Length: 461
Image (cartoon, rainbow, N blue to C red; front, side):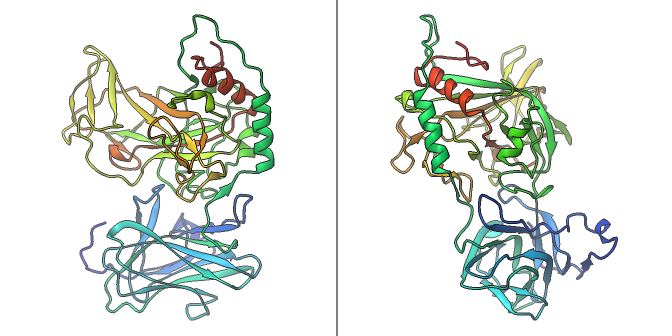
């Protein structure tokens, strides 16, 4: 974000009766405690009233919007924030600052001058779009639904000193975001998997540990069920593949309850997959096909076990905004056409131009080693790792299938290049929310990966 240090006129936005038309994003979005964690998350732009802030796009994880240009005396009010029962709580804010103030963000309840719930001293994070999370632990807090005010205080001047992306209230009393696997269910799934009889591969089987789901485009939404669960419209535009019901409110139960999917096999794989939407000259270019490969990059693929139901992870980095010249790892590429590949680069050098009749492609590879404890983590990556040398690291001892998206876009491109909903080509990323039938996935892992035999989407050799 560029700062010119000329304060924009102070403005007040308040939602009363009929006020929703003034700021569509200002619905109350506090989360009720979920089965995953006793956490409530409020997006900064979802205020009921405010003074001095400006809603703008952010390049923080998941994209979406943040509130910037905040200085001394500015404030935001959030109504109906249910803090639950009194007791321990961890309160977090996601902030960015190029200057560090001096300044603080005070969270108060009831009014602008009400009791201080939590206070955060703002230090420079490295830029207006370089984000950091601050957390304080409370031994007690007001109970039930509250009006929470975020008040910018004690800045030494009237200059902007902070941007705010979200607030988090975790009644577990510790940093949130870790979702534990149910050990009883997981052990039962593992026992069933190990008891499965292996279907012997035929002599002419291709000895590659792999099966796949063959998919097509489903729908587009500014939702991210992993990064922004139960917060519709909080993210940048995503292209969804697979489960047709996938949206911000998706859970493993809702995905399994809906059998409409754009992936084969149906209904074995009801998982949700999504990537940022690709645009060419402002028009969305949706994939003409995606193959989700499940394989192994281990020296010993027989160590691989299935994903637990409800497993979530992300590959790539939505915040990465840097040039991607030819030869860069994990970049868009071309196949087919008159010359079988690219014939040049876009004017900015970041995108390939495919030969006439060619197809723009991207392959996104996910981590393949798991800590064995968590279905998800705060950054949606810390519970998994990539195998560095064909063996899973000690901290991530469980070998899971190596998932990769191979995406084909029906375009050849031009010197104008493309954009992603998340920004530059380098910001390409993808999400995986596992809703496979346990038996169907287990047999494929056993037959195709464990014995290193290439299978199709039906799980057949």
